[in-house]
Image (cartoon, rainbow, N blue to C red; front, side, top):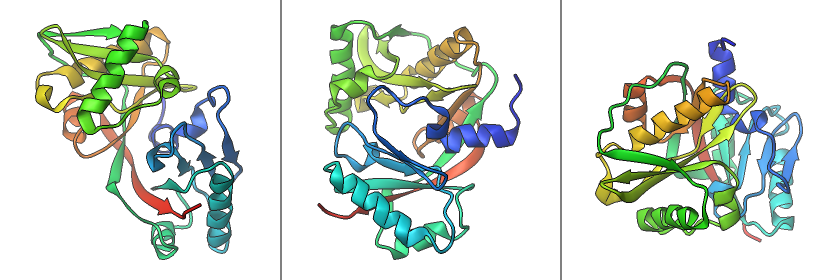
Length: 249
């Protein structure tokens, strides 16, 4: 199946719309937006996306989302404003309602429809299948930025580890979509960056997409990974502006 740019943009920008909710995941979803309840309080894990609001509906929608998260014990979330979000001035309107730009406020929606170029000598990649491998993946997040990922979150999607000289230094996951595979963020410990682990994880996930019969990769990329992905053959299909909404209990 050949996907046009509009289809690729939708898959990358509004990924949650194309992903079957995991068992037990709570969502607030209608034709205006999709809000997901994450397994941890971190705003990055409680996300409001696929925003199609009317000009007169914005304040009411924000109040409704905040009330929904509060009932579930959350006091902050992130909003993802894309090129397809409406109205056209939604980003400015949300800022006026008290939201602020995220620490990484601008992401690119990227897509790759051909085998990504990759040369990763000395790097091996393995699928996570055991508790010991899962513990290694968790340790990578803690070493990278101190994040202690919930175990159910780590288990929710297929995950890989990358080793350099036999040492586990990076991890990444995928989420299967209806016509593509979404790449979750790859994490490499700082001391091992620039040695090919990230590229090897992209290649392994492309192979998995091919095995699934869906040879299309899409992702939402922060600035650090954008140059690598574009060199591997990804191209820009959209943009995402991320806002943090801290509204208290």
